[in-house]
Image (cartoon, rainbow over all chains, first blue to last red; front, side, top):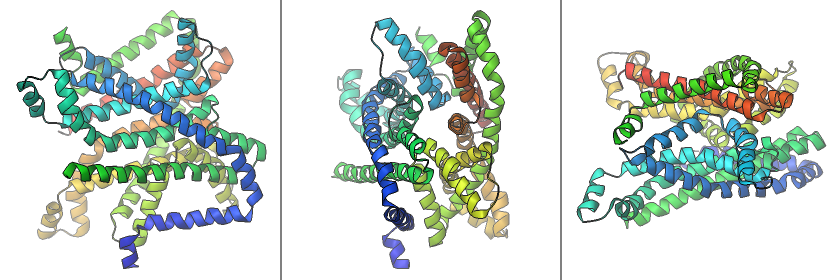
Length: 251
Length: 252
């Protein structure tokens, strides 16, 4: 037991046991799971597509809002803080509803665009919401770099923009990476809220499947396992990436 | 302009939150008094603030207890306790809160009640259990961090002047852990309040659900979601303002 515990964390063993139980339940009633999985499998792709499209949007928003906060002495930090405070003070569900039913119809009326699809509305909402959280992480990362770095860069004749680009940001990015990775996992989980505006992602297809088969047990087990597979593999991938980055940083 | 920027942007957190709060209340009053649609929406949705608060206040203590137990499990030397606590943390953190709510609400609670042969819980209690389960790992993380932040020497010193284990915990360690974790725990309370919006998926008529009901009643998405958003902001920002003031009181 002692030797084993040192090599394999116990929660992983428990996870393996639970996976075996799920596998057993799958093998004992394969046709039920086959039907459910046929209904919900395409949702995994939609969930991934929404998260991967919202990621760059939230990164851009996060960088703009995060950088704006470090420009002390101008009016910019005020707007940035206001955006962050409003988004963080509102439930994500309400943000999604607000963007889907108030903001995007208004934009499409103003710009004269034809109907914006549900998927696009969900992506805009998730990008806006997650951007606020990334902005906080990016601000913290930039502020973690000592003020002396900026002063040194300026004293050798760099402008503020150059110092940011070549001195501060490369160092800050390394500190921010783990936090941004966590934000991405959060984004993937939050994409389940798109189901509430009828985007056909994993959670929504789960609800449709329950409506068709009345089999809540099989459906929600499958949905949960699929989410866990995505998030746990992402966590493991990010951890190994972080280790690799730390090794190159030392070398 | 420069001075204005410094006054607004670079000011302390508490005064900034006060500005947001004032803007929020002014906007809410102005919209209600100037547009009948907003006034109607406000009359319809505002009573369900109580349901939102009831959900939050019921699930928060449960989440705190769960978090404390989990933190003890994660910190313990027992292999089994440690594994169970870590398993709970990893799994729950890997699943969206909405899916946890649906899983607890329509799979776990009905199955357990039919297994144990007891009458099933109502929707409200299911939502409370699910919300507490979902936020337990975050409380555990905060509490663990609090214990780690208290220097080990404090405990040893307390023991060396003759305090028993329980006394050292009660009079020396826990007061410090409490003070360190209070801001983060208060923040979790606000997150809990926001997560109650998801309970609408189990059919509970709290603020968000009554907003949806108002939309299907009046078709007026603009006024409804304006009022709902401003009401949520009123709740959360006044709480975070309160947290900030409290933090200053306890001298942090």
